[in-house]
Length: 188
Image (cartoon, rainbow, N blue to C red; front, top):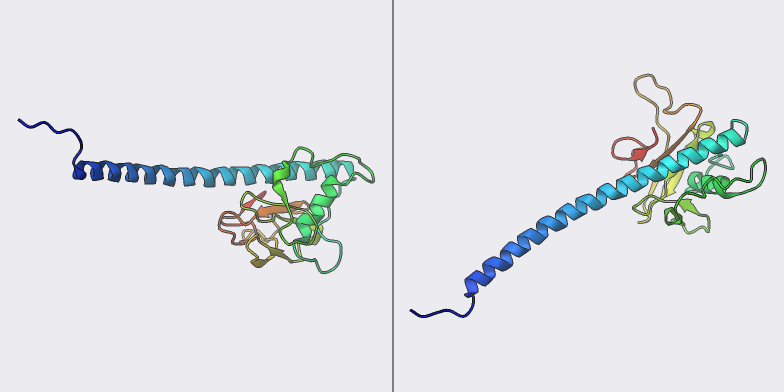
């Protein structure tokens, strides 16, 4: 009987195909894990910003950080104003409210030299304080898409979500604005 010293071409192709299928399955599950990690990181950032806003509220006599300076907000102004309010150490409190927030969560998406808190996908978070719920603001994503951010009302009672407080949301992994609802990640 003749003895073989190696693999046949068919055996080799079968092994390569099996390895390819297994690699595809592993990569697909890694992508799902990465998306969940991004969602969790963004939820944690929004939670940390909410806590910082509540601390600001206590130190500043019942006022949340303002979202806008003027009558018509500029691009990404809400989240830029939140960054300034939480990191400026002037006035009643010298506390750096954002000291525990990762510097990886900062960027300048709209290239106007103003810092913004950004989500895990690189898009700016949306911030609106309750005094400005009726002012829509234009936001620019990392890919250059623009959208209008407008706080929403609860359809059950037509009241604002989080009345008397503030809203923070991310457009999420798809980069589509639903004003904090549907697949957006929000604090309400």
